[in-house]
Length: 497
Ligand SMILES: Nc1ncnc2c1ncn2[C@@H]1O[C@H](COP(=O)(O)OP(=O)(O)OP(=O)(O)O)[C@@H](O)[C@H]1O
Ligand SMILES: O=P(O)(O)OC[C@H]1O[C@H](OP(=O)(O)OP(=O)(O)O)[C@H](O)[C@@H]1O
Ligand SMILES: O=C(O)c1cccnc1
Ligand SMILES: [Mg+2]
Image 1 (cartoon, helix red, strand yellow):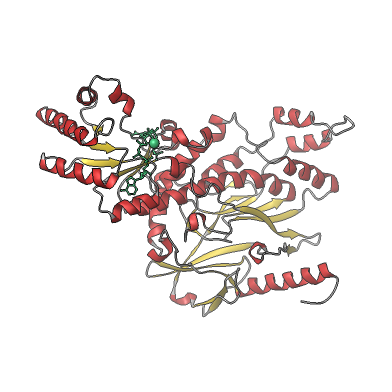
Image 2 (cartoon, protein in one colour; image 1 turned 90 degrees about the vertical axis):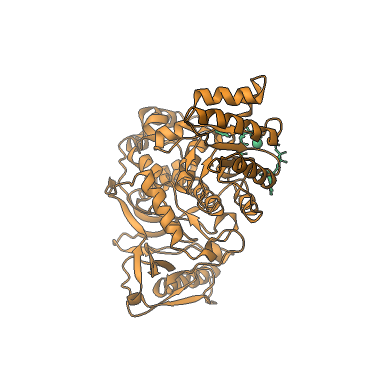
């Protein structure tokens, strides 16, 4: 992918919060800039009150990191920033340091199209404090949005039960970049195509579409409009039947379908974009079948989401293809995922890694210290639990206990010897060098589908899903508890625990 080069003039390095740059300067000034740290990117709660999340955006992150470089224009902009007394905010030596800064972190990440759960590091960054810090905002920006939309798309596609979902969101998406990223994430989440032609070109996504009411309205009659469309595209006719009167629209579609047949062509179907979609799709199905068009597909659109699709399914609507725009690409009912990026370990002067804890009144917000790996256990192809563990921890194959990070009373015993396992965090960059070969987008989409199949339907229910077990390996749990207690004593200046 070449998003950074093609769309953003080669560099997105200033696409960060100002405070990342002021901290970078202060780290540099205090001599801590080259100290190494580990940061984790993770979310705390599934979006849409769901029971799963689908990871997406890693390829954008890789593209961003491969182009990580402060350009001359970036530095000249920073060089002009002033403090109150009119002197430069950043010393020239620091700007020179930034000019020579080469991305050199280790990046481990969970691959796109993987089903993921709260508190699991989706991306782990190991590197100098300055570099780790500068990456916080862009990584969150990319992963939060694409993961959110891929998840929404997966929900919409689950509701459609394997029937094609066409993504129609461009006109309502959050700007240009939001639209492009949403089209990509929607495809990963299971959509069949996008209406966004640029997304098709940039990301190699199938492009498809029908026609608008304006096409029909530009002719004297609906019949003439259908005939003219059939002349232009005899092999791809999906007639929009609801401009004036849906029932009559279906009649006109059948008339033109017959004309096409005389020429050895077959209409593909009709689209209904308003009214009661259950009633009209059933009525249209009956008319099409009786007229000898049992293979003509019925496409439905109009503010659809996973809940309306589910409802239409329970009403036995005769809909074969779903066109979904606004509510998918804007993640209408939950506009942000809320993933965060937190420091979890730092290298001391003696060269040892020191795990770090941040306290919070909300136990949900206390981070998980250390550098981690994530392992998923399977039995007969079904995922049964995920374990987060310290990267240098030996796993006892005869039996382990994993402990819920938000409720230590929830525990699960696992006998690894009886299960298959998959290491989820994969090495992507080593010392700044990419060592991972990105799969193409079709492979990512296929991975998403097989990942979703590996989870019990109870975790994928749209409403009140069953909680999938994700736990800390015992030693990691104990490390976290001991650091919390230590930090609390230290803060209070006394020894109560
Ligand atoms: N049978 C149904 N069951 C549940 N929801 C439905 C059903 N039929 C349509 N809907 C949904 O109800 C909503 C209808 O919205 P609205 O009243 O704005 O549309 P409309 O008036 O039919 O169409 P438009 O305004 O585009 O002409 C849409 O979100 C649509 O997807
Ligand atoms: O409903 P969405 O999921 O966003 O899907 C895209 C919508 O965009 C088009 O019409 P548009 O909404 O522009 O006009 P309309 O409401 O008059 O049909 C299309 O007919 C769909 O209704
Ligand atoms: O091709 C379509 O039918 C389409 C495209 C964008 C928005 N609504 C519908
Ligand atoms: Mg509309």
